[in-house]
Image (cartoon, rainbow, N blue to C red; front, top):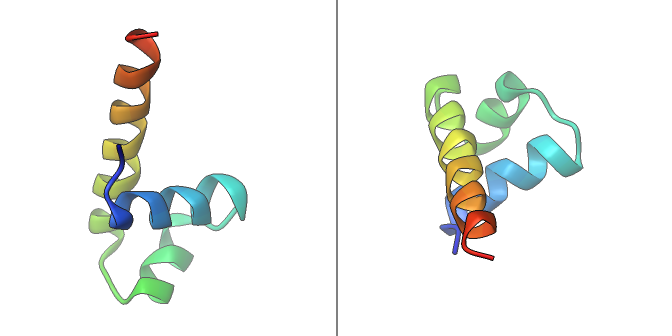
Length: 52
């Protein structure tokens, strides 16, 4: 299960097509924080898929 922060960043990037910089500005966080949230979400999703 993704954290709310991971889910938000992931959806903004993968579903709405926003760039990391745009997400950082929207959420008032650093680009590095956006990267961490999205890459963390991807790692968790990969882990969950492997369990299936």
